[in-house]
Length: 159
Image (tube, rainbow, N blue to C red; front, side, top):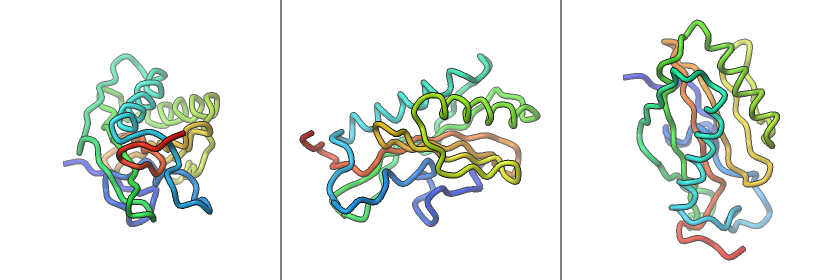
């Protein structure tokens, strides 16, 4: 089984690799009005939009499905999803990661961490909705891509 080698959030649950939600704020309430179902949909939208810059040979292989992780406020969660980027030539990983980086920086994301050239790992956060994304390469040269919501109330919150 393939497993990513990098966590964007320290010791958070394995599937929360795309980020740990939005910035810590003075208010410990939800950082988005989305409910759990809509946050899952939005994470998938981020994945679909981002992968549009990769070759047509791309096949997304989900691992772990959608996962939730607790926030500092125990009533709130982040929702995340992660995919292996199959169907891509590993010798082109540098080019693929750069294409994702270019997409993100041109579409409202802020780079949180970019470990290149030492590691193929980039972690970004969307400026408008607070969703985080990351791409990482495992020790076998496989790329994975994930998206994670900011802290939300699973039932949603009023805007």
